[in-house]
Image (cartoon, rainbow, N blue to C red):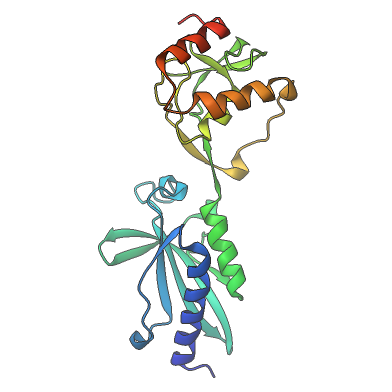
Length: 237
């Protein structure tokens, strides 16, 4: 029969295993074998997408991290993960979130690699996206010059960019309008909720669009270069 100290040692091994891979993603709590507790907590980075997600079960709570408990069931080591929120310093509560697979509050794994995979799954389960309520119109995209469905950006009704180019801009650190430099608000969607979209003539606009992403989204662009760029596109602002 597994003793409590065996579970503490197992928790220490798991802690070290995860720490080596997830240092840039999670903030790890201090772990001391002398405390004789076979569990530890990890917190997501402040800029992690999952911190922006709202669980349907309780929209007032945001996911901050995970608790990982090492238990012995029928003398077999298992690892239980649960999503947590910080109600107050040193006071965490478990969140039930069926959309992330935590309907019962926890998930059970039998290997360290499975726990690591679960941490990475939760961290990367979202897609950064443009607002879903942007008005759609038909016309020529000011980035790739292709006649297609356009999204009307909230900064001005004449600032219309196709869905493909908008999605590429959203992925950039500087998600700004190419015409007025206004920041586009973004949202986070579950990957499984985002349908794959087939974009026609993708090869035709690829080179031009890559140029836009690599050059125009940089803050170092000069005003005269922006003016030249706009004239080349024959834009009316």
